[in-house]
Length: 232
Image 1 (cartoon, rainbow, N blue to C red):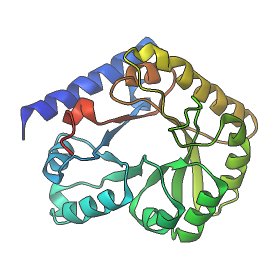
Image 2: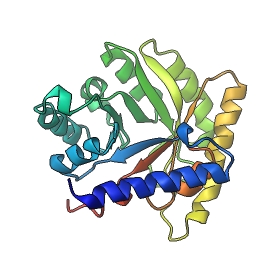
Image 3: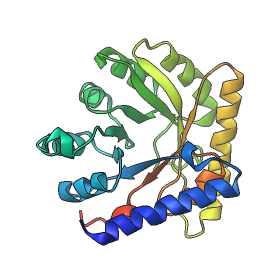
């Protein structure tokens, strides 16, 4: 096991805890999702050995390949892992994704929700992706479309609506992401006032997760700060 990964993970956990405490929150409320896009399987095994239990992947095919390789590890050496799809999902891959992931963060249309619902053979946790910043390069529904999409997801018998997700614009100053995270939290509060149960806010990445935690994130998606810069 390379010490760098263990030290990186410990540093991230300490920063999450400090950010939560600054906001008067219990650090245990924040789930750390290790983002493994472009990370080789041996490094993922190291992360699991260090205590990582939730893995986030951006692409369906990459997750599928890694799950096959990780499945060759004896069960006693590889504890159960929760897999999260955090990248954009095309409807034609909904069937595959429904069988691979425990939680999908990127539901952005009623049509995608319906495709997942039809493909599921079990309850699947999903989050609605909201394009809070309005950037054309980002996926997600517009904030004003979130109530209707929440209604559509709630009508799906095999989907469990668990929260909201967003991507903030990348900036050198993490504070510039704060308004985006705050808007997502306020949108969540508004939807909960309309009767939806939305326990999770998936927001914050390696460069801005501390601000996200201060604004209420319950899931942070961390790749570079744990694994270093990707080589692929």
